[in-house]
Image 1 (cartoon, one colour):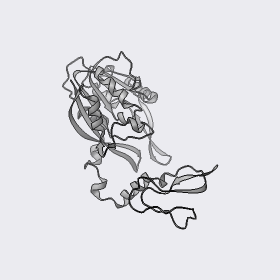
Image 2: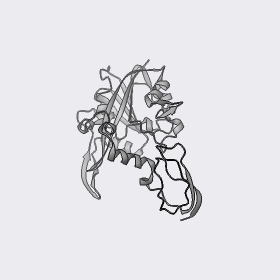
Image 3: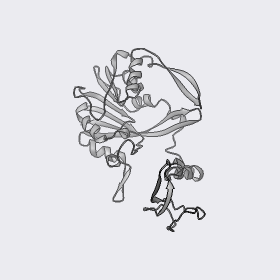
Image 4: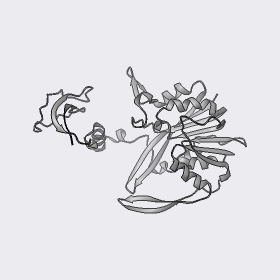
Length: 298
């Protein structure tokens, strides 16, 4: 490991460094979150950042230990209500009273469950995802194949499970392909419905994706965007976020950003909350609440 002489932040949450640390520190003001952290200089060994020494984890655990129920719980959703998210994106958000010979696009389809559900009501459904492995798995199920996979239980313990296309779906209506949501092929055509589920906050340039939508959705057609709005720099640079920041003291939410970019081509018809649950192992789950925004092509 190299040795570095540099300037490093000592805190950002008003927590003072220990007086017994032996480090040559400068006294910093006490109080709540500081906009500009105080600095110290020392000769240290460069080591990887420990996630438990970050502001984010400190804040999460302070909330975990000391937060009131109303500070912790979101929107009153129950765990049971969070199952079947890919199906609910279709059944709860899309107007399925569609004429025959209609087309639907599942953009960011992952392994395809929403795509198959759309095929119950639409004559042609195209699922597109950037992940080659996701598309290969979905395409295999479209061909009637079963996919064996291992569910994580604890440590190295797993349980073998099988995935297959849902019953009652005409699989000939469905096709899958790999594609970039920010640069779709020009000959896709137009669709009566476009679904974008948990995609927008994982794009490096969401504006490029949104700019294509007026040409993809037929006049009078539907656009459904669902997302928990988990904006992260590792996926999207901060300057490209659609929301989750302040401008001159005004809080900008992602729905605001969507509205400003989709208007006047689309009219916002409704929003709703869709809880979802992703299992990591038997005792750990990712629980989120996506907001679904439902738009009509003008």
